[in-house]
Image 1 (cartoon, rainbow, N blue to C red):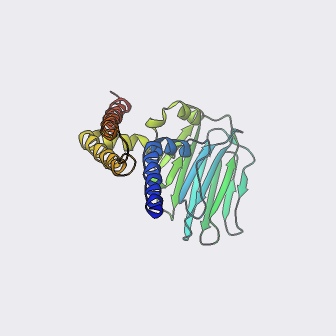
Image 2: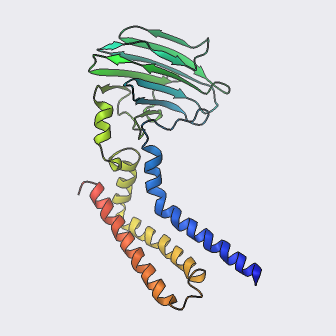
Image 3: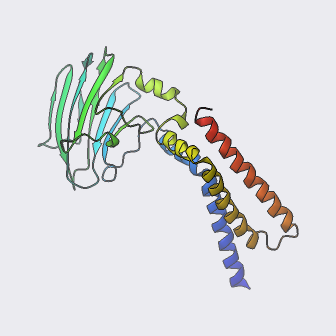
Length: 245
């Protein structure tokens, strides 16, 4: 009996954690990607990461996933670059800095995972980026701002108010949420059914574990399905709203 109780207790804990994870998945994703600095993990993250720090400096990091890659680029402005700070540069890495242009060429690999430049810029209306990886363009590897938005063009500009305006954009209109919610809405009926099936599986797990010894078992199951229907409908309405309806 003691062993059965332990097994039952572990199942109940597992079911509770699964339900909690499903409920908190989207909010947790938002929290993890909503910090002012993008989450960059040298040795795991791969690509360019651009953001504006609390001091008003533009920060550019390029990182590799432990595989040899070369990073090169040209950064221009109609304003003036200040004293650019270099972080993580090796002797073989090259960078030329002038008042209006930065030209760099650096390699990363198994022992050198990331480089960074901190760029003070004043009196500018735009900063233009021309960034390459292994002498090729890949905009999917260029991540701008806290939500890691990708630029639309290979050579792109950000204006002086870009990051301030980005803060005003609702979280669900940023990458990757906008694309994710749009795909769900395009297939909204399948999404509705899919959520219902997952919810039904959770309720049935609760029925044979948590509710099995309850006197009001049928009532609890009925309430659970009602809550599931409300959650499913609420998610459907949310998709309708965030897609501009």
